[in-house]
Image: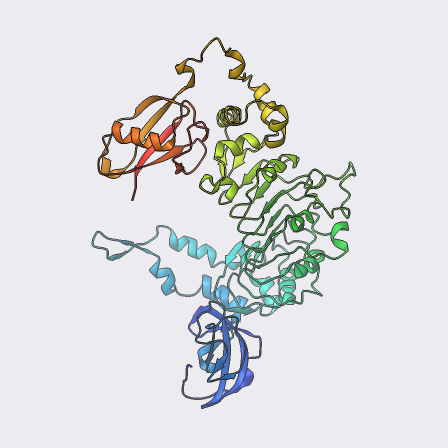
Length: 541
């Protein structure tokens, strides 16, 4: 407990009021208790800190005063240790007309060779600061973590910053939706508003229609989808809605959701939430303007396209058979990184999305060969229209090479049974015919033994280990059936590696990182490695 001399009336702060630590506007919490604490005189304030850095869970010596969100996120402090914040205009003057802060000064230095700070002066900084201080010309304002808890007088706000278009209020003490409504009404030119890390109230009813707002960022505000559903009628022109880190698991919507709301929404960011069932995302399929859905860092295990998959159930509420309606009809970008997708059947379902060209699948089991997934070239080949995969552009050359490698890989594993190919590899026959790839087995009769050279591939070996020194590239013709384990032994011999055990990586075009070849029993053909492939040789650490 923090004790200081003197007392002030407990009425200074209310229960559930947002506050920050006096002298540290980044340490934010919620008042959960006001009153006496046994064994300690005077009035105390029990605070549940957002960053979890307190001393207890709201109880002391067996007596509970409040329930903190974690075991050590609560603490008791005197009123002098808390601040209720400042107004928007006060923050504006502090940020743009006040003296330079210690934080700002600390950022303006470089390190010398002796690791000492050397202050630097930014050329033209005085002109930039002068322009920013002319509020009537200000188009964009950034006021993060300044303790903003209220707006101030609306007439003064509109007179001070009449042309403001973008406002960043990340990490302040705002919580009332009526303040958001008043702010947008006061500033009719405001189109972008960032309220991330402000703990907003659950009651979002009564909010006026914010016709001018185009982008709203509500990351880490603990907002639920029920609140989002209530907000949609107040956001008729919203184009981007960011809802990261809110523990959203379901898309629960009222009866009006299908018929209206979010008509202009182009980008919906639901990253870092708790959505586990793709059917929740299908509820968004009727948003006709939606072009991007960001779903990285959720718990999704499957994907399907409504009406095209055996997994699409309970979809009668959407008129998917109406010719004028196509689910996700304008979706171009779908980010699914860091989920739990592992079945290739779900990957193939992405081809049903009419306009989908930008896909992220990294950090899923399906895209990690070390976890039984497939390499990048297989993803490119199976995704017919993908133009950007995992943030990297798929060039025409990469697509052609990937599709050819994929066809040859499938042929080497499954033979040419048409039914098996169609079930396991829906694009195989299409790609085989398109690239004119013949089945090698049909050209070899039993009386004509296959030549050894026809099973050889030419690969380039490149040594990248620092301790091995610079070594020239080596190009080798090897049997496609050679295993990774045998290739390692060959590399030890070729590069005369005596003390270091090599690690092999496949360097692929378009992939930001090389793929580790850690299955020593896998053959080159199993991995889709063909002529012109580059194998990197590193050392075990």
